[in-house]
Image 1 (tube, rainbow, N blue to C red):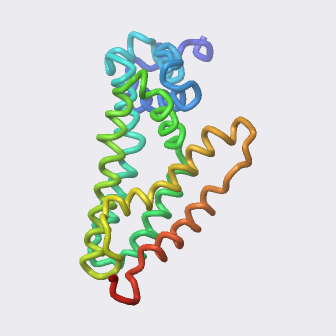
Image 2 (cartoon, rainbow, N blue to C red):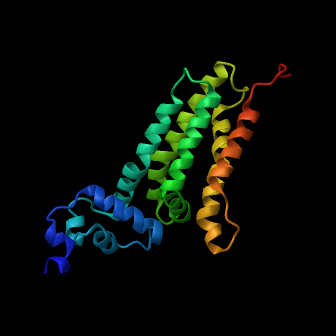
Length: 213
């Protein structure tokens, strides 16, 4: 009977991390609105009642998904960009390498698509994604750009707007892969896009060889 018994009978307690991983997979496959707590519980191998021991709402689960599956990668990138002793071109290459690895090996792109597509009906998704991910990523990159400007490594300009320019094409690539490629649009090589954009942006941010008028 052991082989046929529900997982939650064999394991009296489920770790929140297992629920978060299950929710990440369900959100990525179904979206937020269509995701059911029953599905998340089943994928985690627990009863729906056991799920409520850890999370009261689906929004609470989404918040945990962002904090446990996305934010740790952001922590790493923030620490990397804060290395003032490293020249900015090297910092950006390291950060892009990490971002590319995360995009290719995680479901972060699917979560970003979910936020873009469903935040009108579920504004809490946008709030969580902005506060936990977007504002922190932009803030870290903005600070790194401002510091690089002060060292003469980056041309003058609004560092926050420069940060938007750095991240915009990568976001477009993720949206293309998650939204358009599945319905027949030509696929995009995201690692190649990131590598090419990295060199384009470094050339564009390089300080001018002559004083600006």
